[in-house]
Structure formats: structure tokens, C-alpha cells
Image 1: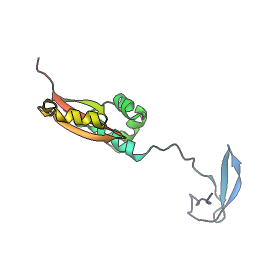
Image 2: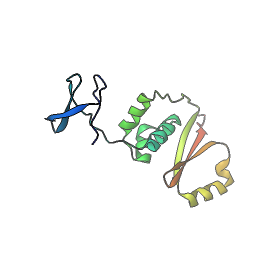
Image 3: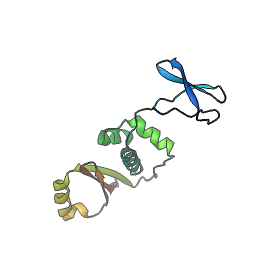
Image 4: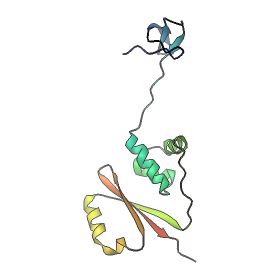
Length: 140
């Protein structure tokens, strides 16, 4: 393990100075400041962060993103706040999505009816593909 840098004076010379709460404590030789190293949390691959934010922008709900990607909806909410993402407000269209493997995607794209009268986005989702389509709300 590398010796950490003092967070107070940024000096590199530190020594171990006991254990507090199961975490190693250090002391800076220059300024005498005692500190512990920040615990690293469980990190999620940036791929999933980007995919979650893309889906959010496309109008997919937090819970749906959770089901699709297997990432907590609370994490998605935190990423939206962290990156200050705002979903466009549009009441004319609603997204629908399908997750398909490669063979199913080829069959889907071969059917001309699937390509008419809607906007469509195809994105990779691990070893599968997600199709997001926008369809107009039907006037009542």
C-alpha cells in the first residue's frame, strides 16, 4: 500500500499512527496532522452510468432503468443530480423499449412495418441490443 499524502499540507512524508475504527491512521511528519485514508466505495463501471443517463434522457423511468441495467434506481437518481441532467419535457411522444439479441434484432429490422411512423434508437446493452421507439399519443 502506498503511503498517502497529507490532506492538510499535501506533504508526502507520512507515518502510520495506529488504527481507528478498523481503518489505518496516519500522521504527517511536516505539520503533525492525524488523518485516515478515505474508504473506497463500490464503484460501478462508467459504461452503466452512461447507459443509465442516456435512457433517462430518452424518457425511461428510474425503475425501468433499474430493471433494464440491474443498477439501483437510487444510483441513477444520484447520477442525474451529480451530472445535472435534465430530461426534455415533451408530452407528444412516449418511449417504448425492447431488449433483443442479435438474431431478434435482424428479424425486427427486416419487417418494414417496424420502421415506419416512429423515431427509433438502437443501442448496445452488453451482449444484447435495446430499441427505443417514440410513438405519438393517440388523440382521444
